[in-house]
Amino acid sequence: MNNECVIGIDIGGTNIRIGRTDENDQLVDFERVSSKETFKDGNISESLTEVLKNYLDKYCKNVQVKQIAIGIPATLSSDRKQILQVPNIKGMDGLFLGKELEENHSEYVIEKPQELIEIPVVLEKDVNMLYYWDKYDKKLSDEGVGIGVYIGTGVGNAIFINGKPLAGKDGVAGELGHIPMIGGTSQCGCGNLGCSECYASGWKLVELKEEYYPDVDMNDLFVKKSNDTVLKNFVDNIACVACAEINILNPDSIIFGGGVINMKGFPKDYLEERLYVHARKPYPAESLEIQYSEDKVDNGVKGAIIFAKTLLEK
Image (cartoon, rainbow, N blue to C red; front, side, top):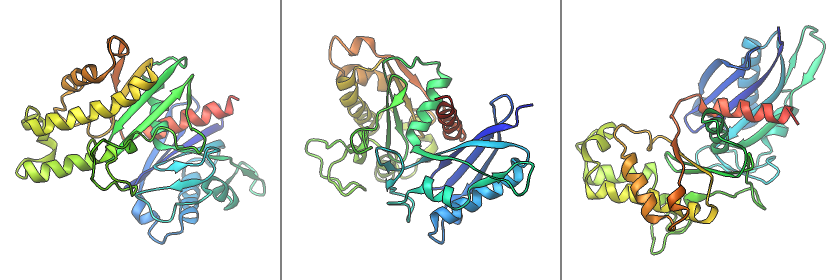
């Protein structure tokens, strides 16, 4: 029996999701805890250490944890050691979270109570963790360029080149939600004006629903109103934003996902029609390879586990 495992953690604004691998490298012991409750006192690393210790005590008493990988809804430094900015969780900005967790005795005892074994902790953008899982789930090749566009509350973007995420000079490559839109004047949460996220995100969809469809349940919005001009323009905005990247990178594969894309009745056919309209002709328009991610609660954890395993294979 294999007594080794890796742990994946997906930190979100609402929940912290955590799980580990079993002897067959399958996800087991998946749990969710409240982010707001966990981080309510503002001591991020200490609070997360407590979550980890509780999890280890519950599920890993006879298992050696080889790696912990954490997906963060944030911009990270190029070496992935420092959290630069987290829009939805106070107190995380500037933290060297992996190092702090290791220093806070994020360790586990195997067989011998006196023997402490240090567990390495690594960070990555949560959207890249989602793409790690989708790439595996869709059996995509590591060769070439793959992109993921995840429309949730904001606009998430993963760019993978030859199987590895593109970080950029400062670690913040792939901020597709912060492309400035010509003529855009809406205030973005990042502080700039006219970012694409202001026009092609979940929070924009909420604004449209409240203004134009106050009596329609959010879950039925596309089922009942997808042919309305307001929502067709919204879907076209998503296509415009995605094609800014598609026309630059000419990707081998494109994955769309996130809560908005997976809403009941979301017009995927119309999205693809508008992608073709905005894509450069003849290519990449004629060679678009589009797939869709299923929005499942454990995708980020499974992606973090895949990422952790790739590090151990080096």
